[in-house]
Amino acid sequence: MTVESTAARKPRSSNSSSGAGTKRATAKKAPEKKTPAKKAAAKSAAAKSAAREAAPHDAPQHDPELVQLLTPEGKRVEHPEFGIDLTPDELRGLYRDMVLTRRFDAEATSLQRQGELGLWASLLGQEAAQIGSGRALRDDDYVFPTYREHGVAWCRGVPPENLLGMFRGVNNGGWDPNSNNFHLYTIVIGSQTLHATGYAMGVAKDGADSAVIAYFGDGASSQGDVAESFTFSAVYNAPVVFFCQNNQWAISEPTEKQTRVPLYQRARGYGFPGIRVDGNDVLACLAVTKYALERARSGEGPTLVEAFTYRMGAHTTSDDPTKYRRDEEREAWEAKDPIQRLRTYLESEKIADADFFAALDEEQEALGKRVREAVRSMPDPDPMSMFENVYADGSALVDEERAQFAAYQASFADSPVAGEGK
Ligand SMILES: Cc1ncc(C[n+]2csc(CCOP(=O)(O)OP(=O)(O)O)c2C)c(N)n1
Ligand SMILES: [Mg+2]
Image (tube, rainbow, N blue to C red):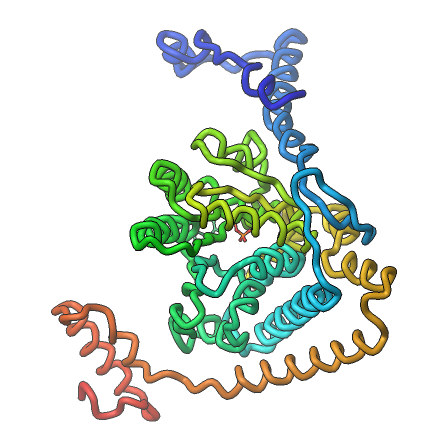
């Protein structure tokens, strides 16, 4: 069934629950005996409702237009529109990036389990989407991430331990966005697409040839902010790439609850191109993002890239995905693992040898140790510091709250602000 036929299929019926019908239905009636005809009607209504639910499930999944350059089996394939030619060094570099990012992520998950972090949002499974797109960027491009872009942060040169301060609750971010052109993590779903669009409009006004990239998820695609940023960026021809990691889930809501068409096709309605790329193929993600960034730089406006991938772990460490999805789904995606497929390719083409993998294992261990030590030694902030930088010129309400909080803090025997507010 085509997407069009799904949409056109069901004219809304107007005779059932409107006007007098509604009144009659709400009037009190004696309990009715279910006749076979009524039972059949109820059954058919239930079947229709199930069909309505089920109909769109297949539509976004079976799209043939997926850009892929490296199959899940590790075979290099060609695509008629997108190609990439990388040196052995570059290929090994992409593999190293993905392995170290995964290791950092696993370390952070463990640190949360040990009580060192309050929360962690794992990127497990999304390494190719993030490293491929992250390595397509130029230094002068600007990135607006969600809260899960640890691989992109790695590509931007943000020290990984700095990503953990906010999750430990000791700071409000952890890095200077302008040092690496990597904005702070954004928790308000979809809002960073507006920031990116506004920033990109500024870049165009400055006459610069850099580009902007906004990361967001399949769930965020339902937000009004994302729709507004699509409209504005298209109309103003803003140099922005919308990079949607469709990891199939928005906490416990599947993508089918966000859209009736494949997400990349949304772009067409706004007047710019959309491309679906295999989000577990680092080569394809690199090639497609490079192309989209070039379009932005050369004044051709926005592109939507939908990286079709999977969130292998929980939404965050507070979530239990076994409550809403089946093991078989995860297992099917395990076979498409982004790191394993590149390893198979590197080995079969003799681009990397045993020494390379052994050295990388050692590097992983060193990174893990570094991250653990850095987190454990992060100083607790002065509790009063949360009142700083709220208003440039101060505010009576914040002053009042500061005084109340100081008094509360001072009521503890070991208070770091003892004396204040007493
Ligand atoms: C405006 C807003 N609404 C709701 C939430 C709660 N929330 C946090 S993450 C999330 C799901 C986001 O899913 P998706 O965009 O697919 O990104 P993913 O977590 O899968 O990377 C929601 C609803 C929020 N942070 N902000
Ligand atoms: Mg998602």
